[in-house]
Image (cartoon, rainbow, N blue to C red; front, side, top):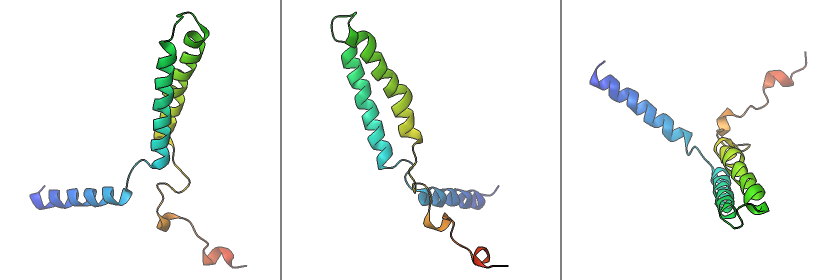
Length: 101
C-alpha cells in the first residue's frame, strides 16, 4: 500500500470521528458523578463504627453495589432519545406511504 493511500485512509477515519461528535452526553456525566457520589457515601458508611452495625453491614454494601453495578454501567450505556442520531438519519414521511392505491 502506498504512502498516499495510507494517508487518504487515515484522513477518512479522522473525518468520520469528527462527524460522530462526543461519545458521552451531559446526562452520562451527571449519572457518572452520581454513581461516584453513591460509591463515596458507601465507603464512608463502611468506615463508621460499630463494625457490626446496621450502617456498616446493610446500608454500605447496598450503596456500593448500586454505585458499581447499576449507576456506573447505566452512565456508560445511557443514550438519550436524540443522542447519537443526526437529523438526516431520522425517518420521515415518504410520498409513497401517503398515496392511496
